[in-house]
Image (cartoon, rainbow, N blue to C red; front, side, top):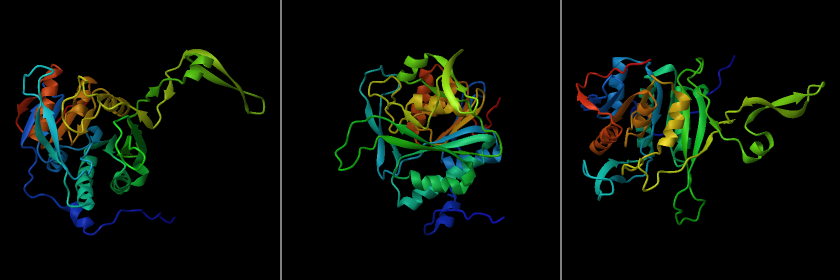
Length: 336
């Protein structure tokens, strides 16, 4: 049997760039933990932290969600209130993270190294989701296939949203792309079927019970009928209509690039079970970690931005939980 030829990305210095390691990066500088060993927040370079976690023990993560900088080539700022300030008080603008790159290959090398490191932490039934935009999604799809193998690719999810229109001689960009790979396609992956509501026309015709196909003697479908069993809805498709966070929404933190909790709730609910470990190496405002905690999952979050770390810790305080500082070597997370 002749093996098929792999399709790969190519750029000058690719192998050296993907293999490069910052000699100064030494894993987490500080660590915070929830009581009961339900989660960790690490401060430091996420590549170094991921490799430290891999050295500590592999195969414990069920879902890794990567929401890297989008190659905007600009510095992003956050609008934050002072600690303890009441809701509605004035916010202060502070630098959050730097998304400036020498070129696209540099961005791909950084993401590829972290994607490969996250792969080593996945359990055989686990999966990784990379959140990007249409400007880079095609490159990341091929890069991810190189790292995981194209047979591990599971789905491309289009997150469609409404936003204020821009003046451009082009169609308005109103979606992001979420690419998912499985760690081991030979193993049954973690999967909890999500559903969406039935169409109004279906409800009018069949109501809220399941339909049943009735076949003729020749094997062809003759008609449909309904049963007494209630239907959970239609199996979820790969185009998701979820609104962006409103300016006055309670979940808004003021951190740039913050994603809505509804988006992460759908991912975490479908791709992990209570007690599983969820990893976010670009923790940002802490949405993934907060959602994982509220849904009964353990978590590992990583970020180098002091603003991101402060925002995440404050978010947990608002949830009635506290991330207490602990010794950096305590990296293990309990699993169910």
